[in-house]
Amino acid sequence: MESFSPYHWLISISWGKFLMMILLLYFVMNLLYALIYYFLGVETHLAGAVTTTETDKFLEAFFFSAQTLTTVGYGRISPIGFFSSFVATLEALTGVLSFALVTGILYGRFAEPTAKILFSDNAIFSPYRSINAFMFRIANGRSNQLIEIEVQVTFSYTTQDNSNIAQRRYAQLKLERDKINFFPMSWTIVHPIDNDSPLEGLSLQDLEEADAEFFIIIKAFDDTFCQTVYSRGSYKYTELLSGVKFVPNFTNSDDGGTVLYLDKLNDHIPAPLNVLV
Image (tube, rainbow, N blue to C red; front, side, top):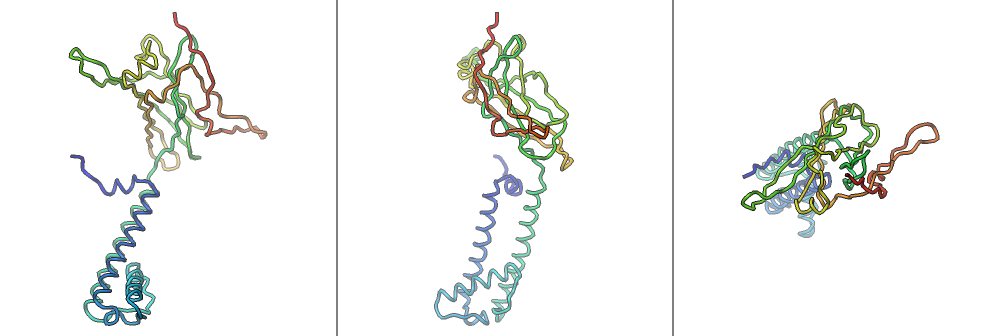
């Protein structure tokens, strides 16, 4: 059974889920301690509480809990007696430890170096020189500098053995260029479909029958964090197009620079495949 790591889960979940979980935890902790103060007795154990109804009692207990948990302590309300003082002491300790833990995780989320590599929506089969090629396009989604970028593409497919049992097989695709030193623009990854390619002679229907998928691993050095970062992607057979080619997604600006359009990463036009003889 796969082990569960709370730290890695908290680091990897989305920012929305992380913030919602922190807010929920903060509310639940205050609610729990507020209920303890409420059942101990607000009038007898919390000096300075202004209560006329049961709702007032609970709200006074809740906001006193929030002040204690965060160690703000405005001073209008204070605990009286051993039991309420003990609960307040325990809550203050809980607050200090909880905020220290959340701060550490928050720092880890900000400090973790990650690559934001954008992939074209589709991988394509396009004419390439006198043959055809499997291609997809990537770009850096951030303004940071990535250097020494390396790409690996693995072709995954199923075949039938002698007993008609489906087996999953993997083949490393040889790329026209699998490494570049600098990544200022978009990069079209090209696998020439020559006689040595496992894709030779395969149509889109053949790839669908083989439940094909292309796995991509990108490795780069992030100049901002001075650390190596990774990015992963994949294309299922449903995300493949044939007989098209990518169009340039950049233009020259008036000041002599180059403008890269990330929203045009997947733009393509029809391009009949080369007929091989």
